[in-house]
Length: 242
Image 1 (tube, rainbow, N blue to C red):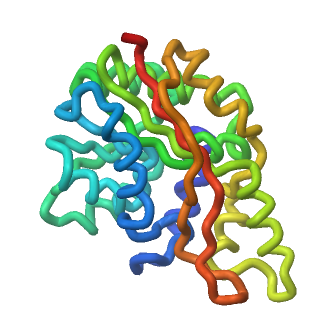
Image 2 (image 1 turned 30 degrees about the horizontal axis):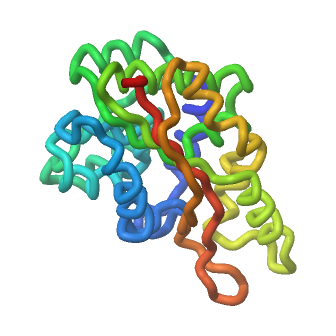
């Protein structure tokens, strides 16, 4: 298991199971629904499988499975995948272990399902703490393998400014809010990758970035003032040039 996998395993083993207990597990209407509104107009083939990469406990995977014909949720953490399956007794989505930085793993999945659209939220920033810097490009290379010739990738990453927001909350008189504390303990807080560097990864992998912008990334936690914490983030759509 990779370094990232070990960290994610520990995080998901310790996290409470009730809905909304994890910082990034906000309601789909406030997160992935907004992503989909930006992503969907850029899909060349909405009928392709949609891979939810870094699916965690499957909250957004199940939302996507109600809107696309085939939605595999993929994650490095067995504990996260166990939760996703328990929360989906009807099998609306499929869940599988995947290290997207491993060429053989992404090639095997592509061989099974063909070209796919890929939804990626906050996976690259985890590499800034848990992997060597050189592991980020292999991860995006793996995403490129899954996309193939006809798919599109939608990447959402917290902006560098998000790290400053979280550090400010952690430095407050009462310490970090309860849902932020495990994120900091497991080293998955964002803020180290330059915003301008993110679109360079798909470009280096041979993809063309066709759209991008900013949007708020809603969390499940609230600040001392009782207001829900919303982090700045950037999004990009990338695929093979036509």
